[in-house]
Amino acid sequence: MNILKSVFLFYYEGFKNMTVGKTLWFIIVIKLIIMFLILKPFFFQNYLKSNFKTEEERINYVTKELTVPAEQQNQVEKNKIIQ
Amino acid sequence: MLNHVFLSVLEWSRLQFALTAIFHWFFVPLTLGISFIIAIMETIYVRTGNEFWKKVVKFWMTIFGINFAIGVATGIILEFEFGTNWSNYSWFVGDIFGAPLAIEGILAFFMESTFIAIMFFGWNKIGRKTHLTASWLTAFGANISALWILVANGWMQNPVGMKFNPDNARNEMESFWDVLFNPSAIAKFLHTVTSAYVLSAIVVVAISAWFLLKGREKIFAKKSIIVASVFGLLSSAALIITGDTSANNIAQTQPMKLAAMEGLYKGKEGVGLSVFGILTPGKEANDGKDAFLFNIEVPKLLSFMGYRNSDAFVAGVEDLINGGFVPSYSDRDGNKITAELSAEEKIRRGKEAIASFAKYTEEKKAGNEVARDGARDELFKNINYFGYGYLNSPSSIVPNVPLCYYSFRIMVGLGFLFIIVFIVMLCGVLKKDREIGKWALRLAILSAPLVYIASQAGWIVAEMGRQPWAIQDLLPTVAATSRVDASAVMITFFLFFVLFSILLAAELKILFSQIKKGPNISNE
Image (cartoon, rainbow over all chains, first blue to last red; front, side):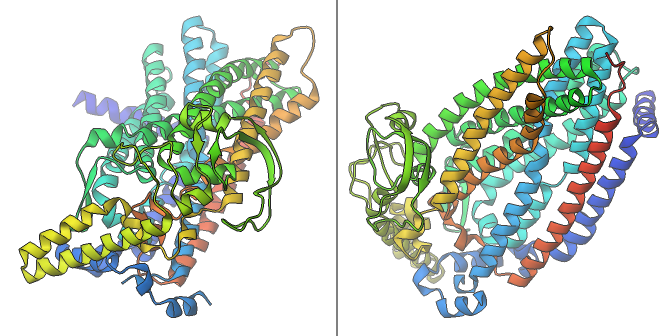
């Protein structure tokens, strides 16, 4: 218990006595909030996990994706999207 | 299906990944190198007991802390992008790529949260030697973290130690040690960290030069320059060696990248290394035009660097497209190649591999075991060309030659400039009878932005030079992306751009403000 208390006090006093470090921690916290509470859930969902429920579905999907060679790609559709 | 992987998605995804990686790399190299410079300075403090060095260490620790805090976790965004924009890639390599990244995440968290805390909070609470140990462990911990990331990157440049499993469309690790000791990974790690040491040494020298130019903190600045210049010179020597090792490795595993880096279209024996040249604008492979308008080269050096034989044949872009030559490199399994295949033939074999993979899946579903096994054998006969099957034309194996050529020369040229800066600054501070000239101080300060340009140029060579591949020969970027909406990737690109710009501005503001305050050591 004394060790845990010492570790806690070590970090607590360390954080308390910081000067420029407080600003940096503020930036870190804001950054992590933006990354994990905004970007990750709203903009960066895992494509395979969010679109397919089971491992089997993911395997089937990726296999389908990877077994279409280049000449079968729909170039016309691609060109529309580029514009 | 791949017909839904629109070009714009690919380009936005690549652009976004490049933006994130470039931004991340603004912070990483300084962390990797300055942590060692600080540990060396603290060693001097512990050995001499001179409180002056403690103040020196504390100042550079503040710079380290600012850089670390702003940069920390920026690399995680790259992992977000893998899952969202590069789902085919993530699935295809997940088992290989995941292991080193997971180790890195765990190591980074535990080592950094423990030792950095001791480093910053431990003054006057723990013994000097214990604190010094924490400082060294912080430096080693950061570098070990980098090792795992670069192992993952090295695997993409030269995939080894795995086998493709057509049952789950994934590459599965067969040998962790082959992945870890992959020559491409080792070469990349050593070259990357030594470049980071040079970058850090230049940053310390540049900031110290600014103090000298302002007539402030002269002893602090001179002592810092001595430590950083010696560290920088030793790192530069190591950088030259690791650069040579990298070039040798690229010659063996990525001959097209080497050809692009050198603007070499027609291969020959005893090829010289281009020191500097002007490439012919609009030059295309097999168009009959000269590659250079003007070129200065060191005779036979490229052959020697690539294959340790000054008369070795080095393949050019056109050779690699047309095939039919006897290469100086071996195939992926280490066997001598009697005649290199043309890109067209590789594409044909790649398409056969993909068709065999499709057939394997169909026959497996239908329960036709004999046909399934036959398709499997066909697939593995051509597996080394698998990725070529997604390419439309032989010319698509050529990366952007001018970008690779000029980026490489920027990186190398600036690398040699930094050696001059270290020598001039070191000689300048060691001469007691006169001060360093203002021109030298200004050159040192100018070197700070230049060293970041050199560092980023190195990554441009490494990553643009391997195009069109996400994984060399196995998966081109066009087959690696997700079927996501291009506009969604575009929006997050601009979101990142704004976020990163704010973070960078915040770092620079805090950094400059701390530098202006200075270490507050008596001025002499």
